[in-house]
Length: 203
Image (cartoon, rainbow, N blue to C red):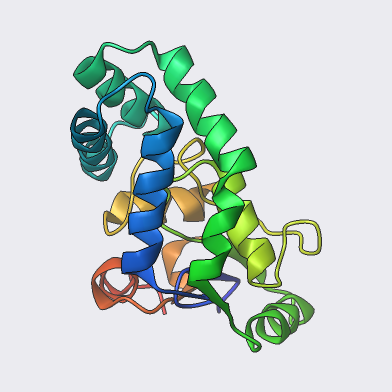
C-alpha cells in the first residue's frame, strides 16, 4: 500500500528553463564572490563543489558540508566565508531567478489532493541548494512550506547523497518513516527520478 508520495520540483511542480536558470544562477553566485575570486576560478570551484556533492555517499557528511569543503580546498577561502556569501545571495538575490521559471496551475490542486487522501508528501528535488532556494521555488510553484506540512523537503544540509544515487531515496524513506515499496515517486527525469525509484521498488 502506498503511504507516501515524493515529488520532484523543477519541471514537475514548477516549470524551469534550466539552461537559462543555471546560467543566471552561476552569474549571480559569481557576482556575489567577485571581490574574492576571479570568475574562472569561481566557476571551476563551483563545478567541482557540485561534482563533489553528486559523488557524496558519506552518511556522516551532508551535501552542504561536502560542497563547502571542496570549495574551500579549491579556493583557500574559509568555509565560514563561503557559507556567508551563499546565504546572502540566496536570501537577497536568488528571487531574480523566478523570471526563468513558469507557474504550473495543476501543482497546487495536485498537492492538496494528495494531502487530502492522507499520504505523506515529501519534496524530493535534487539537493544541491540550501533550504531557502528550495523553499522559494516551492513558493513560486504555489505550494509553499507555509501552506503544507511536508514530511521532508530535501536540500543540501539535510541530505547525504544526491540524485540519481539510490542512497538519496533510501534516506528520504528512512527520514519520513516508510519503506521504499510503500512510496511513489513523481518526476520528469528517467535518469534522476524514475529509474532509481524503480530499482528500489517504488511505484
